[in-house]
Amino acid sequence: MKRRIYILGAVLLFLVLAVGSCRKAGSWLVKADKPVHADVMVMLMGSFSDRVLQIADLYSEKVSGQVWIVEEAMGSNRELEERGVQIISNSTQARTAMISLGIPADSILILPGDATSSKMEAEIVRDYLRRQTGIDTILLVTSAAHTRRAFKLFAAACHPLDESPALFCSPNPYTKYYAERWWRSKNDIQKVVMEYMKLTNFVLFEKRALRRGD
Image (tube, rainbow, N blue to C red; front, side, top):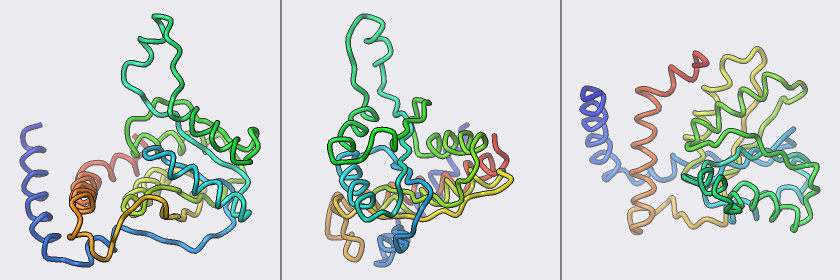
């Protein structure tokens, strides 16, 4: 474990120094594909209000008629529920908001799993795809700075499938992120550094496990 931390720390330090001098680092994180007709849109959890708005836009443009959301873990909510406290999960709130914006309830599927990371979301979607047919294209809907890593995670997770779906990304226009001048904003600097840190972890540790289907 210590060796892994040392390696990750050393690589992260190198990346921080490299990224700090690279103006294109923020733009590279954004994977923007032209809207295509997708069999399903997968909305990654996070800033779900912004992503719900984007899903509603894409649905109205007839990009896809199906939406999948992976149930997001919410800490000690299970224990609260056991004590009689009614909890509405973020995933359920997102689904309710989509319905209010005109997306039919039967077009929205919440996949169980209590996901705590994008990696877990990719694994849960992959496992569900193993039981499905006819899903050839997936559009990933997430924040702009997250699209590159999300694509890599889902591509690696879907690698073991007999027929891996084509993956596309739709960066969220409602989440503020100035890719071309990311170094001018504290929030954007944090996003960029964090994404490169997580990408480092993906390359060193997550990619191989995902491709094996672990």
